[in-house]
Amino acid sequence: MFKKLFGNKETELKMASPLTGKKVALEEVPDPVFSQKMMGEGIAVDPKDGEVLSPVEGTIVQLFPTKHAVGLETKSGAEILIHIGLETVAMGGEGFEAFVSQGDKVKVGDKLIAFDLDLVKEKAKSTVTPIIVTNSDDFDVQVAEEVELNAGSTPLMTVKKK
Image (tube, rainbow, N blue to C red; front, side, top):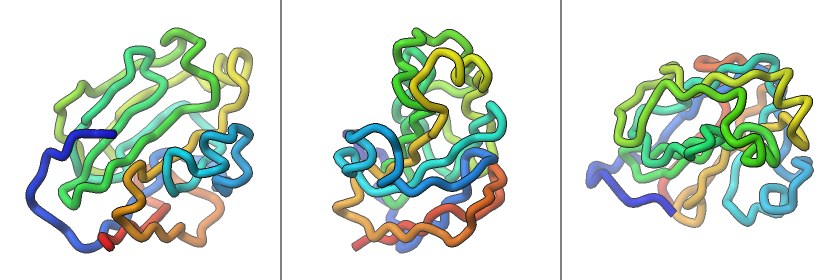
Protein backbone atom coordinates (compact mmCIF):
# COMPACT_ATOMS: atom_id res chain seq x y z
CA MET A 1 0.00 0.00 0.00
CA PHE A 2 2.72 2.50 0.92
CA LYS A 3 5.90 2.98 -1.10
CA LYS A 4 9.06 1.64 0.51
CA LEU A 5 11.29 4.54 1.54
CA PHE A 6 14.14 2.94 3.48
CA GLY A 7 16.79 0.35 2.67
CA ASN A 8 17.89 0.21 6.33
CA LYS A 9 16.32 -2.73 8.15
CA GLU A 10 15.67 -3.01 11.88
CA THR A 11 14.84 -6.45 13.24
CA GLU A 12 12.29 -5.53 15.91
CA LEU A 13 10.17 -2.46 16.50
CA LYS A 14 8.41 -1.64 19.75
CA MET A 15 5.45 0.61 19.01
CA ALA A 16 3.96 3.02 21.56
CA SER A 17 0.25 3.74 21.70
CA PRO A 18 -0.65 6.72 19.49
CA LEU A 19 -3.69 7.53 21.65
CA THR A 20 -4.67 7.65 25.30
CA GLY A 21 -7.57 5.31 25.91
CA LYS A 22 -8.59 1.69 26.26
CA LYS A 23 -7.29 -1.13 24.06
CA VAL A 24 -9.89 -2.86 21.87
CA ALA A 25 -9.21 -6.17 20.11
CA LEU A 26 -9.27 -5.77 16.33
CA GLU A 27 -11.89 -8.52 16.12
CA GLU A 28 -14.22 -6.30 18.21
CA VAL A 29 -14.00 -3.27 15.89
CA PRO A 30 -17.51 -2.69 14.45
CA ASP A 31 -16.29 -2.63 10.82
CA PRO A 32 -15.54 -5.85 8.89
CA VAL A 33 -12.65 -4.29 6.94
CA PHE A 34 -10.76 -4.00 10.24
CA SER A 35 -12.31 -6.80 12.34
CA GLN A 36 -11.70 -9.39 9.61
CA LYS A 37 -8.13 -8.07 9.23
CA MET A 38 -8.55 -7.22 5.54
CA MET A 39 -6.17 -4.28 6.04
CA GLY A 40 -3.71 -6.27 8.17
CA GLU A 41 -2.92 -7.17 11.77
CA GLY A 42 -3.15 -4.69 14.59
CA ILE A 43 -5.18 -3.39 17.48
CA ALA A 44 -7.60 -0.55 18.14
CA VAL A 45 -7.95 2.11 20.81
CA ASP A 46 -11.12 3.69 22.18
CA PRO A 47 -9.71 7.20 22.76
CA LYS A 48 -10.19 9.35 25.86
CA ASP A 49 -9.02 12.52 24.12
CA GLY A 50 -8.49 13.90 20.64
CA GLU A 51 -4.73 13.74 20.23
CA VAL A 52 -2.82 11.31 18.01
CA LEU A 53 0.93 10.98 18.62
CA SER A 54 3.45 9.12 16.51
CA PRO A 55 3.80 5.54 17.78
CA VAL A 56 7.13 5.06 15.95
CA GLU A 57 10.12 6.78 14.46
CA GLY A 58 9.52 6.99 10.74
CA THR A 59 8.20 8.95 7.80
CA ILE A 60 4.69 10.16 7.03
CA VAL A 61 3.93 8.38 3.76
CA GLN A 62 0.26 9.29 3.54
CA LEU A 63 -1.95 11.93 5.11
CA PHE A 64 -5.51 11.62 3.92
CA PRO A 65 -7.04 14.92 2.67
CA THR A 66 -9.78 14.58 5.30
CA LYS A 67 -7.10 14.17 8.00
CA HIS A 68 -8.99 11.19 9.49
CA ALA A 69 -6.12 8.80 8.82
CA VAL A 70 -2.35 8.82 8.52
CA GLY A 71 0.17 6.30 7.22
CA LEU A 72 3.72 5.97 8.52
CA GLU A 73 6.65 3.83 7.46
CA THR A 74 9.49 2.75 9.73
CA LYS A 75 13.13 2.07 8.83
CA SER A 76 12.31 -1.65 8.97
CA GLY A 77 9.68 -1.16 6.28
CA ALA A 78 6.68 -1.67 8.58
CA GLU A 79 3.72 0.31 7.26
CA ILE A 80 1.44 1.65 9.99
CA LEU A 81 -2.06 3.02 9.40
CA ILE A 82 -3.84 5.00 12.12
CA HIS A 83 -7.51 5.38 11.17
CA ILE A 84 -9.29 7.76 13.57
CA GLY A 85 -12.80 6.46 14.25
CA LEU A 86 -15.05 4.61 11.83
CA GLU A 87 -16.76 6.22 8.84
CA THR A 88 -15.01 9.49 9.70
CA VAL A 89 -14.11 10.11 6.05
CA ALA A 90 -17.74 11.28 5.66
CA MET A 91 -16.94 14.18 8.00
CA GLY A 92 -14.88 15.72 5.20
CA GLY A 93 -12.11 16.86 7.52
CA GLU A 94 -14.44 18.71 9.92
CA GLY A 95 -13.02 18.54 13.43
CA PHE A 96 -9.57 17.29 12.33
CA GLU A 97 -6.28 19.21 12.31
CA ALA A 98 -3.00 17.79 10.97
CA PHE A 99 0.37 18.76 12.42
CA VAL A 100 2.39 16.81 9.82
CA SER A 101 2.60 16.55 6.05
CA GLN A 102 3.49 13.74 3.69
CA GLY A 103 7.27 13.23 3.72
CA ASP A 104 7.80 14.54 7.26
CA LYS A 105 10.15 12.58 9.53
CA VAL A 106 8.66 11.91 12.97
CA LYS A 107 9.77 10.38 16.24
CA VAL A 108 7.79 8.66 18.98
CA GLY A 109 5.50 11.15 20.72
CA ASP A 110 5.38 13.77 17.94
CA LYS A 111 1.87 15.20 17.52
CA LEU A 112 0.34 13.99 14.24
CA ILE A 113 -3.33 14.91 14.35
CA ALA A 114 -5.77 16.56 16.75
CA PHE A 115 -9.49 15.86 16.49
CA ASP A 116 -12.68 16.93 18.21
CA LEU A 117 -13.64 13.75 20.08
CA ASP A 118 -17.16 14.99 20.88
CA LEU A 119 -17.79 15.83 17.21
CA VAL A 120 -16.54 12.40 16.13
CA LYS A 121 -18.87 10.81 18.73
CA GLU A 122 -21.75 12.82 17.25
CA LYS A 123 -21.08 12.40 13.52
CA ALA A 124 -19.19 9.13 13.03
CA LYS A 125 -20.15 5.49 13.47
CA SER A 126 -17.58 5.02 16.26
CA THR A 127 -14.57 6.65 17.90
CA VAL A 128 -12.70 3.33 17.99
CA THR A 129 -9.39 3.90 16.19
CA PRO A 130 -7.66 0.96 14.47
CA ILE A 131 -3.85 0.92 14.32
CA ILE A 132 -2.89 -1.52 11.57
CA VAL A 133 0.37 -2.93 10.22
CA THR A 134 -0.82 -2.90 6.60
CA ASN A 135 2.03 -5.12 5.39
CA SER A 136 1.69 -7.58 8.27
CA ASP A 137 2.32 -10.52 5.90
CA ASP A 138 5.99 -9.46 6.15
CA PHE A 139 6.01 -9.03 9.95
CA ASP A 140 5.12 -10.87 13.14
CA VAL A 141 2.81 -8.59 15.12
CA GLN A 142 2.53 -9.08 18.89
CA VAL A 143 0.01 -6.97 20.81
CA ALA A 144 1.10 -5.77 24.26
CA GLU A 145 -0.80 -6.83 27.38
CA GLU A 146 -1.68 -3.34 28.62
CA VAL A 147 -5.37 -2.37 28.51
CA GLU A 148 -5.23 1.27 29.63
CA LEU A 149 -3.00 3.18 27.23
CA ASN A 150 -1.15 6.50 27.43
CA ALA A 151 -0.25 8.14 24.13
CA GLY A 152 3.45 8.13 23.35
CA SER A 153 4.51 5.97 26.29
CA THR A 154 2.48 2.78 26.81
CA PRO A 155 3.68 -0.16 24.68
CA LEU A 156 1.08 -1.18 22.08
CA MET A 157 2.68 -3.68 19.71
CA THR A 158 5.98 -5.31 18.84
CA VAL A 159 6.56 -5.73 15.13
CA LYS A 160 9.33 -8.07 13.99
CA LYS A 161 10.45 -8.74 10.41
CA LYS A 162 9.69 -12.34 9.36
